[in-house]
Image (cartoon, rainbow, N blue to C red; front, side):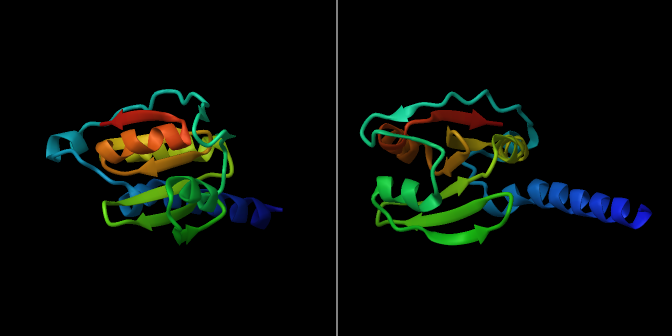
Length: 148
């Protein structure tokens, strides 16, 4: 039995470590050095329907990308999250979905170290420049959160 307990602890530590490092690879920040040095707690997420789409999230990366008019290229496909990138003539943005709300909350808490502005829905986050997030919000719903 001790081996099983050790294996479980190792898996838990690996999961915690990977969730803590994900924002390094995925977070978009518009802030300066001072913003990155500050840490914030994300505001609670309100689930909202996207008026234009008539869809209530949670949704898949591909569904959210389709609502924004792009076809996402999947960058990360893990148990804790899926992330796709959309590249358009105007901008590049990331769509991240989570199997459970707690994974999203952990991701946002870690992203708070780097600052930035995010469009946040039920088990999904869109990372982009604030101006683009304002344009995407009527299509996707969610709330815009500034971290850092």
